[in-house]
Image (cartoon, rainbow, N blue to C red; front, side, top):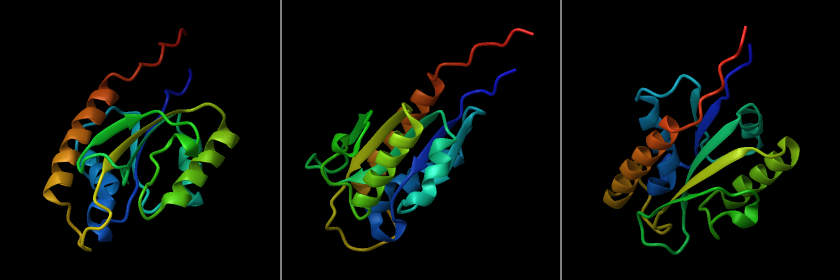
Length: 161
């Protein structure tokens, strides 16, 4: 009997910085919904190399983060990046840490299925613990897209006994 593939939904951001914490807000919302049994949600905060182990233990990673990428505020962009050069030009406050972490993850762990949901924010907003109206709408859109993606995930082949 083989272990079923595990999906890690990792939300990044600092919730004390308003929309910059959108990834964490989305993961917290997803944790309150019925998800497939092989899905684990993790509040990754502002990242760092402590996240390497959870990344390496997953077969599939859905990463959610804020971006200051020049798109209109509230834009949800889905990409499948491989290295730091594949990420939006500026992920906000934890820019270098997340890119470095993912480069190390790919170098050590080989080819993994990583999907990034980057939500465009205004990096110059006032400090607060809630999401703006545009970010709240973008979060709802991202949640719907992620739920759809999780439902469409390929199912592991049945083992023959």
